[in-house]
Length: 281
Image (cartoon, rainbow, N blue to C red; front, side, top):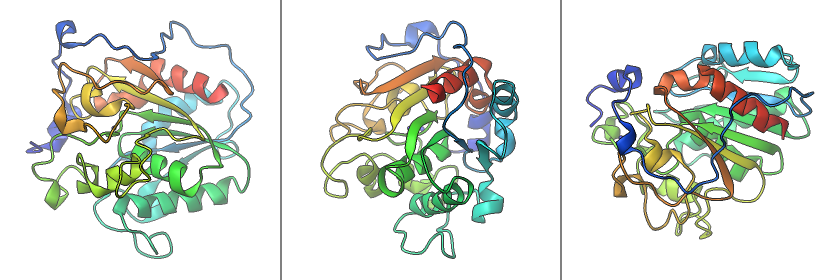
């Protein structure tokens, strides 16, 4: 885990950053030069797409992973937020049993995700592989609803520290306002008091965390929001120059860097291989 005059243009555009813009990152970054050795998956994986998107975003990943031993709808599942939860906009609280008792829109989606996981995988561990807004929902599930169930959590380009372009967020025109920096929701999610538990930890004990970031992503900048960082109580995404500087990465989280634009990330072969290797850990 950016003015939103035209979010569609942002989503479709490739980034113009050059290498001189890229900081030296003192993080545990994976240098995956070739796919890991295929192994037998022993934990089912749940694929969670992003805002206003569909599970078709995972077509390339599903094709790749089924060739390596996964079986779709047996140990590989992709949730369709529009069909299963009733909406994929992340703008309004979900109605019905999935939204009951929810304080935040993201929480209502996480409750729907919980119902999906409990239905598809009634017991045992699961891996969560996510893109964009789906990463926020998965993080909430992993921290508050299913901490004992998540093995690996692979977050592809999500606003972990608050998306920067929030000028039109009040109307949910391009971003759920909860995902803006320093909101009550993000403080709770990142362990920042008073809404959070005061641990100031984006990666609490439980899952193995991994962040996929991209220097070609102008929707979710790797340098201010997409990495997991230390001390989120001190600075959020709007406190950083998203083209040049980077908060201190959280050493408890792995990371993988690519160069493609936002919507391409889940279809990129190197990212797909990285996520596969993480889920075999």
